[in-house]
Image (cartoon, rainbow, N blue to C red; front, side, top):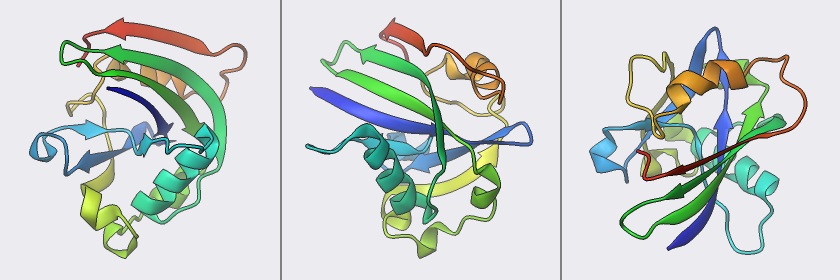
Amino acid sequence: MSRISVRAIIALDGKYLLVRQKSSNNGAFWCLPGGGVEEGEDILSALTRELVEETGIEPIIGNLLFVHQIKDVHGYDGVGFYFQVTNGADYLHLDIAKTTHGNAELFEADYVDIQTVHVLPTFLKTKLPELSQDTIHGPTQIMLTDNEE
């Protein structure tokens, strides 16, 4: 199975907007908001669509921060594009019950300290603070990993 996904890195006051998806192990894991790119859709349109569906808020998309390739023992082969979203304060008081997809897809969405929750993939706990700094400019960092959870 091969898939292209897009994720948003939305920081505010040292915390990150994360979601607990209903489709992932009974919501046991927090992840960055976003989702799959549909056939014929470009990645920026996909990220905008996913965030509006899940949060009801139009993102201001900043830099592409990194690309992550995931291959696992179950045959999943995917590529994720991770973008900075710069209007973090707009996401502070989310009500997923008022969105088109939030209640169907999410248990909750909130700003959390990434050191206190299980975030997939694991390397995000150490890389997010560095990647989401406003001072990042220059080439995109490319992360390639195998079998990472």
